[in-house]
Image (tube, rainbow, N blue to C red; front, side, top):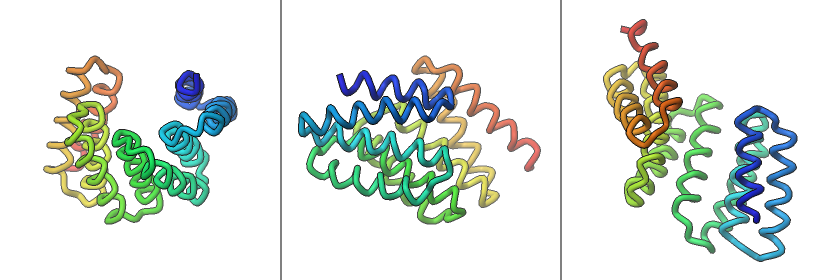
Length: 175
């Protein structure tokens, strides 16, 4: 049931209805606490951190992620850990801290590669490509975004493939 609230929260988050997303995540958090479920607690804290990032509250997001990582150490869910590192990378990137952002994205990619998570790898490569673009490394950006676009297309996520294609299109003006 907690996962249902998490899924609903993601739908509302994607639609930018962050207040309702947080309500759904709050219900999931209550359930995870009642069940003493470290996986659920870690995942909900990551989702809450992501809404904090969207609101621009990076300090609170980082606190939530640190809490999630503490729960994840007990749970051992590697997918959740990869998502936490990816979100920490986003926080660093938003702060203009490219080195720590790159480290976090690479940690997420290492986990996703080990898990053979195509979706996770595509997400990681998309994030890493943005770091390389910020450093004007067009070749690395193009390579990673192309790989990510192709994976998204192959796993049935054409909207993500189109989004990454739009990133690739921006590189034409950089050359």
